[in-house]
Length: 481
Image (cartoon, rainbow, N blue to C red; front, side, top):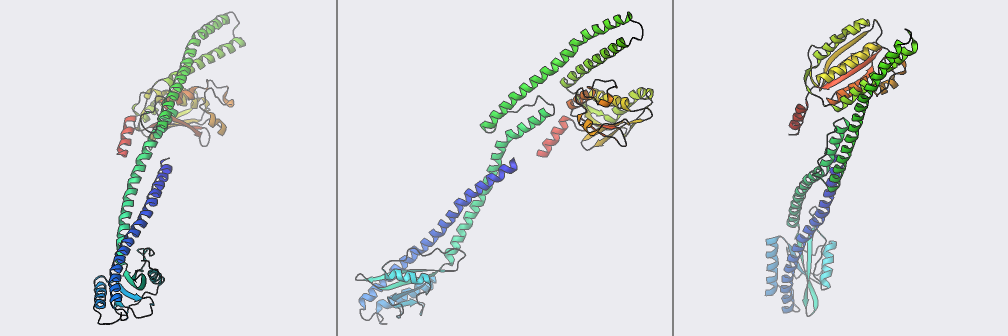
């Protein structure tokens, strides 16, 4: 979710910054040009005032070289050009006539469209006020014109033609500052986006962890509803209430199974005793009484297994560092007499020592159930092999038998409560042994899996973690640091 939410927030923030940055850059360029235009308008106004006195004091002889005011005007224009590099001139209404004064000598009104427009505006009695914007990547010049008015009539036009290099440099410098500010703001926005997504998604991550814990059997997991948006805090509280209710229902279910199994033991024992008393009155070898005895013993076995299952699901695992290889070899030795009685080969293969974290009693019980099943379904002369190996972060115990095995559909159902293959109904058992095994292993973080064995039979794999809960938490903390 973070990978989807973060890009969205970053794109939105970048869009906002760009929407603010582009108008700001345009406003900065317009302000710089307007400052230049205002400065040029002031200059042209000053030259227009000088030209007005020239035309006024030299009626009929405006171009006379001896006119003192004309000399002053020309000197001002030349000094202006030398100092600023700006071309300037005073032109009569007919621009084809020789100019009143110009600097540099021989300069004429620019023949570009902007020069014509500025000259025409001045002839109409208006000063240049809104020339087209010059951008940093353009090599254009800035033309500004002002009218020279005498007795209410425009008699001449002052024109300046300015280079724009410095102005474009200032605009570019301002844009770079704006770009740097935008980058800094973007970095702050990305940091804020990370903090915001972390604040929003932290309760979701905690909720996901708690959900996974509950799904894997750790029913005590809960969510601390103390951070995040109000909606997620409310969701966390609802989740905790749901988890409490589910745990209570499961606890009631386990208690009911345990109580029912325990309460049924006494009537069943009394019933079996009465059956034995009745059997004394019947002749030996009576088929019905033998069948009743067998069903009674089977029912007693089912009740014992139900009680064991309830206890396995309820009890907490006593995890400790255990030599898994030694434990597997010990259980193989314990089952050797049973294997020899059935003329089935049973052996342990693998390393002499592999350590892992497990409840020794629960793992022994689980291994006993698996080996018992393997010996039941393995025919005479066949072989059952128990092996142990380290597999990454887990230790695996593999029990491979040479029995008939299971089909794909049966492999999908093995381990279900009370389920037994239709081909094995004549074999003693309640169908709860592997369910008890799974519950015992799950309490300690272990798992059990089933697969076909080659060339025939069933391969059962029991896995337990190689690191304890404290070591795993320490490793996670180190990685996050």
